Length: 181
Image (cartoon, rainbow, N blue to C red; front, side, top):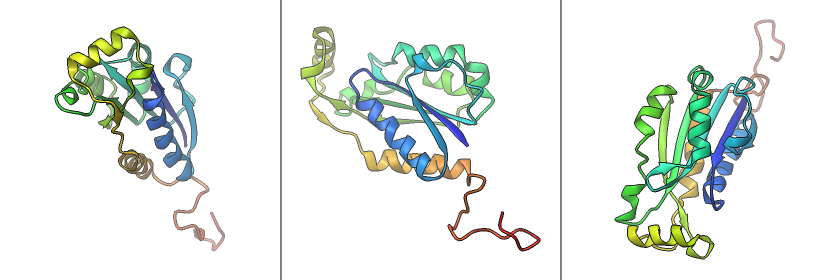
């Protein structure tokens, strides 16, 4: 199946999460396109979509929100999974719950929304971002659990099922007439 993994990431950490998910889907035999949400013109070529965003100020980045809004109808007609990545340390982790996610999950008929801890490196942040992080008492570090991300990618692949032409066992499947299918 052709799967779109579209991720809005400001400093690359959330994009890396999307790549781990895409790799899990590829290893399960799916044809995966990784795109930034602003670069997605059509949803129609895809049988399934994983849409994710970094969370800033309790919200998804504008490009991810905009894709979800403009493509709501075609997204709601196929399997869709959502994920968010943001601050991980207390009390900052409370801001990793985007306010729009309940409505977005319902509008897109998403099969799930997963929140992942992110990565924080103040040296790459703007002055405004550093100010917000200081107020949220965020701490530098990479808090991403890429094994958990990978496991979620594997769950998505399992839910999508086997890819046609790819045997589940790796040894082939026999059809009714005894030939391989």
